[in-house]
Image (tube, rainbow, N blue to C red; front, side, top):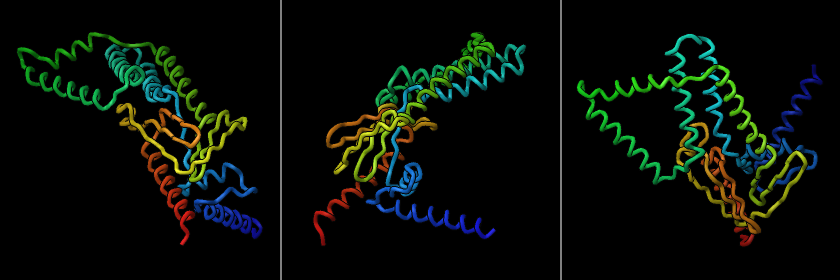
Length: 268
C-alpha cells in the first residue's frame, strides 16, 4: 500500500514539475519527456497552440446528424404520411442550408443583404396576411403538398456518406497541422511518418480573417482563416475552427515574444 501511494505521489510531483517547467515561455522540452505530454503541458500553460486546417466537408457533421435522426424517426413510424413528410421537410431545409455554406461565400455585405431581404419579406407577408389573402396558411399548405420525403435507407445512406466525408477531414487534420510557440513554428506534414519543418518565428505577423459569416456564426464551428507570415514563407490555414480562441492565444504568444526580445536587446 505504501509503495502504491509513493508511486502516485511521485506521478503527481512529476506532473506538477512538468507544468511548472512548461509555464515558462522560453522552456525547452526535456529529453526524458514524451512529445505528447510536453505538448499538452505547453498548451495548458498557454505557450503553444495547434492550428488545424480542415476540408469544407467538416461542415457536414450536423447534416449527418440530421440524416441519422430523420432515418430513425421514419423507421419508427413508416406508415404515417404526414410524419414522413414533416421529417422530409426538416432534412431538405437542413440540406439547403449546409449546401449554401459550400456553394456561396457569405461575406459581410452579402450577409447584410440576405438578412435585410429576409426581414423585409417577412414584414411584407405579415402586412398582407388576411382572411382574403391567407399568406402563411397558404405557404404551409404548399409545403405540405410538396411531399418531400425519403426512405429510411436513403437517410441512412446520406448519414454514412456525410459522416465519411467529415471523417476524412478530421483524419487530414491529424496528419497535417501547424504548431506555434513563442519562438518557432512547426509545420507537420504526414505527421504519422515524422515529416516536420521548423521555422523561426522572430517578430511574427499573424492575420485572422473571417471571410464567411455563416461559418463564423455557426455555433458548432466559429471558423475562419489564419494567415501566418513567417520570415521565409507565408502559411494560409483555411477553415480553422474556434477562430477567436486561436486569435487570443496567438496574440498572447506574439506579445510575449516581443517583450522577451526587447528585454534581451536592452538589458537593464
